[in-house]
Image (tube, rainbow, N blue to C red; front, side, top):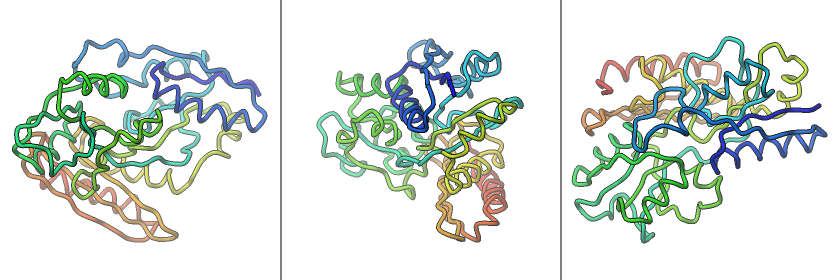
Length: 294
């Protein structure tokens, strides 16, 4: 089968898409990588990204039939998906944690000097950093992984907090000083997971992609996103959730914080696998009652 795979053109997006393309080629399929420019790629430097900014153009290309498959970072997909599209597979998940990287290396969140500047593009990361270290200064720092690493090295900030999975996938994992414990900084829902998206009507292609789906990853991602939905937030909300599936048991750490570091709440929930979505729904509603999430 010939498959046109749509992706952003960043180094990380291409690495993610090539990993999926290799799987499909190993199954005997002819895969063409198609680069698509999204609104997230053309926004002004340090402007705040909107929900779906990195996926909308690719989703529309799928719906128009210009590509057959899209690969996204699962955390970037809007909570309300396009009705004509479906996530056909979630392959293995990478490290879901956030990572601290300093210019000189060898640092940690606790060892940063008072007044150090920490760059991030995320209200969630900003809030949890402030909750842990009120003496640090948060600096808005946007851009893809390469751009943020370059800006760190240029001295714009003393450290950055970024998704570990993205750094690992571009082969720079050795630069990570500290992989932050989820109890200190609960990851964004679906962080570290990839979504392989296709048209809902392409039954033959969906059957091919289904071979690459990991049910435990799918359940974890669905539960984490349910937490976010239950809070009434979007993918930019200062909410973290990380689910772990082990046989019939389900465990989830859920956290929320205001972006100024106040009202932090982090709790752990557990239960049977079959109850995962109900537990996630209740956890999200409870978090919304306890934290303003602004």
